[in-house]
Length: 497
Picture (tube, rainbow, N blue to C red):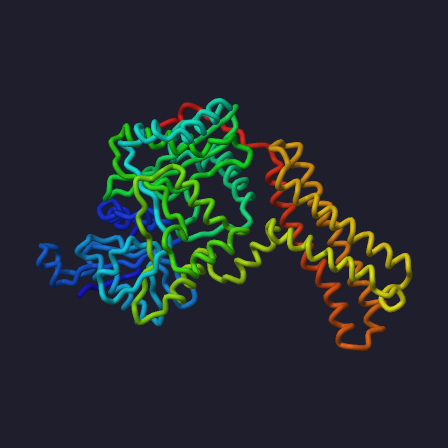
């Protein structure tokens, strides 16, 4: 038996991670956004271990870091515990959650929990693992990696390790924040949290950070978190500016691996490649269908091209009496920060490219229907009818131009500014369209409608621009971020490790 408590004890948490942190998620369990559930040995066990028998005076022997979402606790990987205590702590965490009326699951485990008959598991993906001691020989046999690094160096990209405690403060911290903002602006999905939260502040003294600069501008960043029990490192965050030269990400990884090799490190990972490997058939379909919003295959392809020594499976674990589907849904809510609906709306209002493309295609048949509609029934005058048709034709052309510029525009600040201005113009025009359409519907169409079909048509005409406007404003905001110059890097010698 054991006892548990919920008070946060940051010093004890850090000590336990240093002692028992054997997984890629262990260091992340110290994040300020996570809750922690602590487990202490019972007085009987404490006495046998020559520890004070007063339970309240004991230091925690293990903990579980988790998020609460809709009557559920989603743990960040396995419990941080000794191998002897691991299953006991996981089972007690499930029991404590059930006593509070909450479900429990463990997202991102390495499979040890299945040794308990109480847990079921599902493969989520795989993490690539390297031995940095073999990296020099590895890169000698990897012509593509050497060529990518050569390209980046030829463009003037240089890598330097900096003190992680300084990347959130001063001019360097501002440049790093600008890099994060620009990197996020290239993503269609709203930023996610939980295990992929970008956090440089928690236990910053224990982290390692490498910056890539070109002509005094910050073009990339690699942040690493320790995996203490393996004496290894997780290459946690690899960020590349959208205007960075080709090969910047490869050069960051190469530089970091060489540094780890020089330090005698024998284990390093780039973290989970979601849905990589022999996942369930329906997860394979998710991997394919979600490509326009999140390119799982592209993420895995980058990690594959670095030719890892091996791939280690990563699982979702949950109590057998529970539902695997519900556990997966709870995990998705944890990454989404709560409501999946709110996450979807945040993504929609970012103006993702797939949605812009859908709006463009839907506008084509709508314009044809509009052109064929009888003027007398739907418009105050022939000129008004013609104006609406011409406006929608121009809108289709402008949307198509915007999509092409997003896909093929050269990587120059001037070209990006032109694209951002076009998006801003489109957003403004569609907003005016929404107002004028609503005014015409109220003043002219509604007094003349006679059937349910007429009402539906009027509402669809009003709803189209009303929905499209915030989508285009979101796209304009993202493009304006990308149109800004790359962040300038103030790199005084005091920042260098």
